[in-house]
Length: 232
Image (cartoon, rainbow, N blue to C red; front, side, top):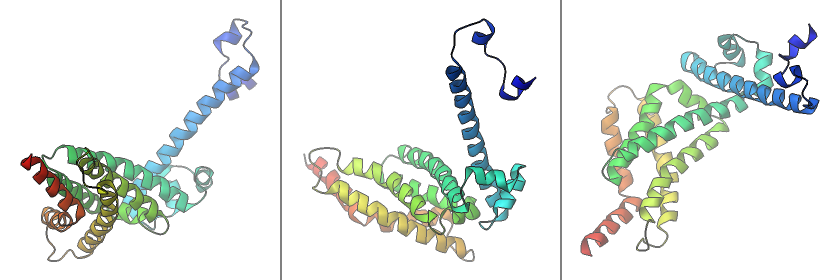
């Protein structure tokens, strides 16, 4: 039966309803869009697993093979490998965003929160250097680092500009500091990854990087704000 190729007949049509053909098609379009999004998400997750296993130079053929499909189908969802890299970066940023927020919320002070966030970033580098390289190469790096910068800046901007007594320009200083901090942590993390012999452990590096970063404008503003509260 030809109708089997497009799905079952709707209950409304079976009972002689006056439902228009356009309404039936709309429902099918919605279902197809949901299926397409689910397939897209599955391919992104599979690409991440393939890169983790094979390295950042894994090809579209490798990803398609691991997904049990053809390269041509993968290209229906992603114009090229860079487009797929961007989607994997979005997935990683979403996960690291949740981890950064949880790490910050679990700490009693902004400085300890910063140390926890640095540790989360280093943990991502350590857990899957292949995926990290995949989302920080070529043109994708700006998307990835820009997103992480926003995640890092937001809580400190709120902390420093949370009331009328905040220093002028505190939020802007936090945003500028976050951009520099993410670049600094990236550089320190990549050095650490590439020097396995004699390097400090992750906890020690996170503490050291935090100490260096806290000497900058955010640390100074936070300490000044705390001093104002104590003097009131």
